[in-house]
Image (tube, rainbow, N blue to C red; front, side):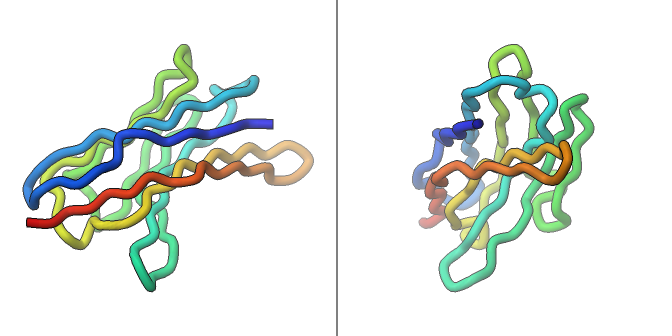
Length: 118
């Protein structure tokens, strides 16, 4: 069982920055692929970025060059550094962990609100 707790959300002006953290409890953190999703009001949840246990990353086109995903396996924590934030980035951001054993196992955090507004 893995529990995920996000922090670092808040309100920021356009062009500003925030860094989200996701602290994971439970064993085998480094074996999980870690992801950040977001869900804006009245829209479907979308994948923002992912990072493998070994540190390989992928970013959605909408955040490429602005957001950076990373992880610290010794601290059981993943991060999302967000720069040049725009109103379209306003959403609830969710931490997600996946692992394939005999089938896919996944866990979600409760989310943290990010609001970009002038």
